[in-house]
Image (cartoon, rainbow, N blue to C red; front, side, top):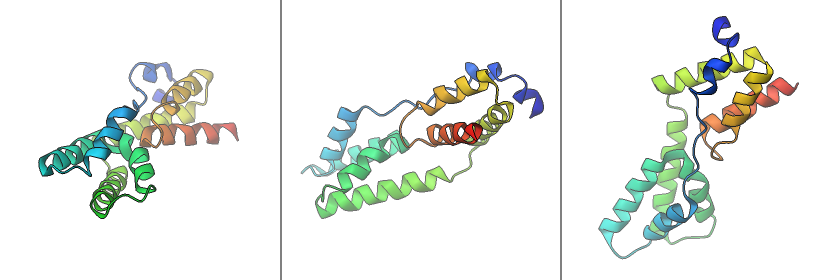
Length: 140
């Protein structure tokens, strides 16, 4: 860990911010949840699942607009799935968490630049939020 912390430039090209979901596409998929065609509704759910945590903010907003019971049920299920996935420890997430820890431990200007780049990712994404938290801790 100390070797990694001593080389924050190592992460500059290896870590990428999470890209935000296309808002128009996400809105169309959410609208499709209330469509007449069952297959289209199922396809929309599958696509929203594939988008993962990047679609969570749009799903939350849509839920706040008092949708139909069917759409509410589907949105709530998607949000529960996103929440469970946020706690899932995968090998990739563990590697990324260790990289964030090394950057925070480093605390150099280069490490801050990498963290700032990651913090600029999609709103609500695990990586974006963790990078923001690391930056806040470094400011203390």
